[in-house]
Length: 83
Image (cartoon, rainbow, N blue to C red; front, side):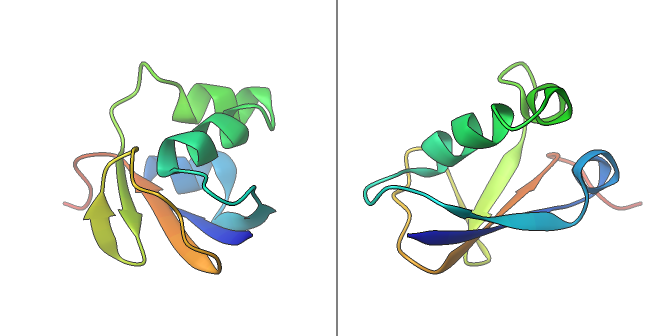
C-alpha cells in the first residue's frame, strides 16, 4: 500500500518535506516509523525512539498503534511547534 509521509518543523529541516513509501498491508504508524529509521543515519537520528514525536494520520492526531489504510498521509512533528 502507498503511504505519503510529511515531516514538519525540525524534522523537515533534517529530512526534507516528505516522501512516499510502499508498505505491507496491516502496517501501523509505528511500523512506518521503523521503516523510515532504516532509510538513513539522518532518518534514524531524527526519528529515533529516544525522541518524542507526534504523529497524525490523514490530519488527525494518532498513536503508533494506529493501522494505516492504503493511500493515506502520515505526518511526523515534534510535540511543540511554532512560536
